[in-house]
Image (cartoon, rainbow, N blue to C red; front, side):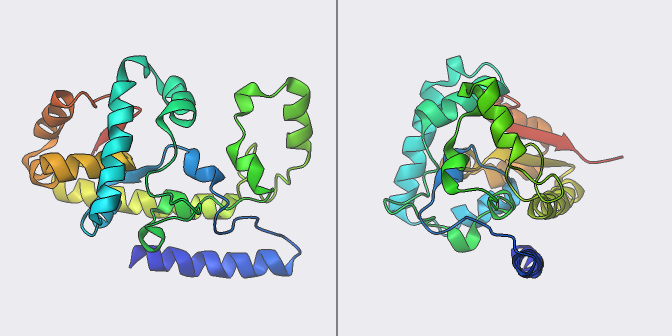
Amino acid sequence: MQQLLMEMSLREWLAGYAAGGGRIHCSRGCRGCCTLAVSTTFTEALAIAATLPEGLADRVDAYVNRLLALRPRLTDLAAYLRLHRREIGPCPFLDADGACAVYARRPFSCRALLATRESPWCSVDFSELSSAEKQAFVATLDPAVVAFPTHYAAVPRALGEEFEEQAKRRLAATFGFALTGNLPLQIYLERHCRLSATIPLGDEATRTLLVSRGVDAPFLLQLAPASS
């Protein structure tokens, strides 16, 4: 239901943006943003895990195995994001044609990434660009439209964050904390460790599970307490 509400809001914004001459460059098969690390709430991950075909489950397992193999080198968020693109690889739900195999259930964070520049920019590692190249790119952006200094539209980004925060608040109200983080990793933990059976036991039990699997790093998964 919440994803449907977000889609309705996005359609309204997209219609206005197009009417004003704006263009979104996202299309089936463009795949650039699918090389980014996808972060979601546990609610979204659980919805995907519940209907995951076996073939996709195998791809999730392979992705997580690569992540765990690189775990000693994932020392901080910057290393995680860099190695994700270079060595862990793209989202396991990306098929051979560059389409999303769980598109109808894709999380808020994916729905929120709408590119105002050509799709190759979604694959660029900006840490590898020269200062002049970065300045030239930034000069092409409209600060009134984008989530500066990215080329992704700001309104969809804000909508995604709003719906994600609502999901986190519901989780925290129910269990006393909210779990968010790497999407395939959460699905893997649900399939292999019944994460959904541990979360009702509280944040300490959940943290113990994450420690036992070697995935308690804050850039992988986050346990946020309920707001006081």
